[in-house]
Length: 342
Ligand SMILES: NC(=O)c1ccc[n+]([C@@H]2O[C@H](COP(=O)([O-])OP(=O)(O)OC[C@H]3O[C@@H](n4cnc5c(N)ncnc54)[C@H](O)[C@@H]3O)[C@@H](O)[C@H]2O)c1
Image (tube, rainbow, N blue to C red):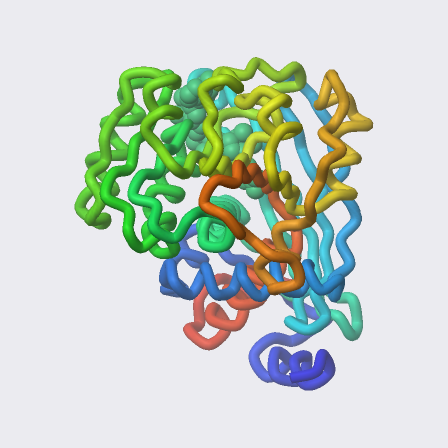
């Protein structure tokens, strides 16, 4: 459907230019998108990005407190009629200071033809779901498909969803190791997710033990202005796959530099973080390609069992707006949300 036809369709349910649909987190969840749906939607965003069929400037940010950020994340994916911007925040101390989540945000979804906003929606749920979908798709192409072990560093919102999503793409997983500095976070992950996954979820005794036990590893801890890597490069072996959601905070830069394949989700965005000083020793320059290029089949994923592959997926607005389009479509169909006058 082209953007004018899409607009006409939306216009049957929403008075475009006069009102918007406001969707809470509960509304987004009520759309009933399954894990498989979300992986498929995210795949379309990654493929479009890989084929350079998107417009997405690097996220810009403001930083009120140490190790915090707000990011403005605009994106256009014309082939998906997806256009808008996420305004997302990460405040790692929130759980301790205010009993609130680390990550929050809102997304404005716009009409591509008139530019008018169509919806404002919670972005916590979208972020929580599309990020592990990216990691799971990365694992599908970059990890050995026979992998039986996955390890997740950080057992918060992202950690829980990663454990939920990863078995969908790594079909042979037998053991999922988890590690968090807060032991209670590991307990609640097991309680919540173990009933849903066949692989046994095992709390790891240490970072080193987990690195040495897993073929595929992922991290979603906290993005630090000055990285404080917990994984020693010498623990990492050929053949492993490392999927990073938290920039260079948790892993030594040497691991990225010596990887047989080092991928990033968006080169411009990573350069932007480099310029902002997040890579104190400079960003690794051995970039093999972007995640979307591999998902779109433009570049090869894993070619040999013994390759060390590292992918840094720090999150792309194209993933958010494509998810938001589906959420809006379903919400209008199902009569979810509240219409607000403009
Ligand atoms: N790449 C992306 O697209 C994307 C999207 C959303 C969030 N993130 C990042 O993912 C990270 C986690 O986000 P979240 O919403 O899950 O946060 P969260 O607060 O819900 O969970 C983070 C967990 O990591 C644990 N942790 C912190 N430091 C640790 C360490 N050194 N070792 C082990 N565990 C540690 C915390 O105890 C907590 O349980 C943040 O850095 C955030 O910026 C990335």
